Image (cartoon, rainbow, N blue to C red; front, side, top):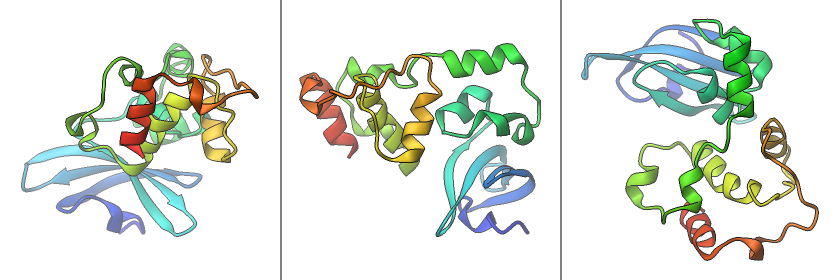
Length: 170
């Protein structure tokens, strides 16, 4: 059994997996639901962390949104991605544009991992140019074509709705 299997959702049976530089993409089967799915996990200093679990498979855009370095995508995905899909994932717009259009509710974030909630909150800041001191967030957003760090960024520049959504996510 892979050493990350303990962080898979309860009931998931590990069918196969691919590992690359501290990440693992696991094909799993939920016997109770009689469905197959995929889980993405990351090795952190304290052990493995579940980043996301989906009922189908992950795309390059999913891996990009979850912060997996692009150089690892083809090593993790069962179906290698082409250059056009890679470019689309890297250059696509923000992953959660609705956070500047509507007030978030519990249903909007149900099922998100802690990492996904952090990315959603950080994206609100990134759209306004937050330069991010934390390396993983800085590296993640620097891969986005739309991201432009602003050394004069201030959270007071956020709209009232963005501030409310940020508070909700934190």
